[in-house]
Length: 284
Ligand code: PAF
Image (tube, rainbow, N blue to C red; front, side, top):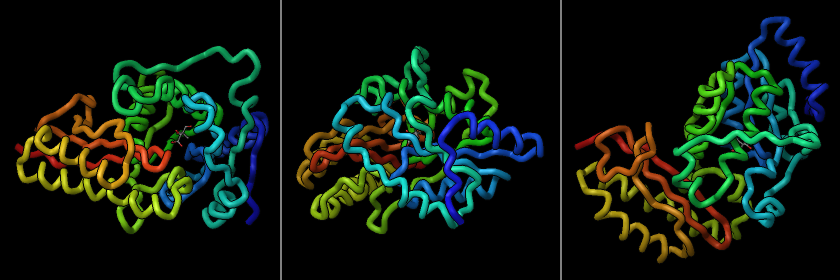
């Protein structure tokens, strides 16, 4: 089946109006393209839960804080459409910038304290860009459900907060992180890794798992953090933006997983920023 590309808001509105008239539920999977199996698992979840599915592909300039990062972001539209073919989605919405941020666009959606930590602390303005674009995508698609990966856990929390605070009638569904065989979390940025760097990249998840095991056995996080960061350094990671244990509910720092917790990491390898997080069972 050929991909049902939709490039304008007017065209998208025509389609969604008909679907709503027939009482069809609409699911949206927001992406920036360069689709991998992680994205496809979101599409599968949307297909299972909704009558109509829209995949959006928009490399959102507002969420990049470095021009070079935006320029280097992989763009693979034809390949993306090929990967989506088997899911028979109802629309692939590929707006250009004017459809999302028309001339004179002056609104910014900004979420409070939860964006001051983790990726928010290292990428100023990033979550404002995400919050603004998802608000636009939710209203443009009039989706009933929206699907996001837990790999970007802080993003998932931010999007949920936006939907709640702005009374957007969309159910934000979080889906598990999909990993490569060696444990590396799937990400469009993995495409930017050289073969050599790709082999080293698996160490991130391995080291996180080792720390998770020690936490499960009752160790305190501060006793593990420095060693984990030294291991990342030895594995070839150049800068470690963060390696932290935080509460799933509030993102406050924890010393032990005394409440639902996650271990969060972001580190640079050969010029590519990799992030990951893993669930840590409550103990102690
Ligand atoms: O996770 C992403 O790919 C992006 O941040 C999103 C949610 C599509 C917003 O541009």
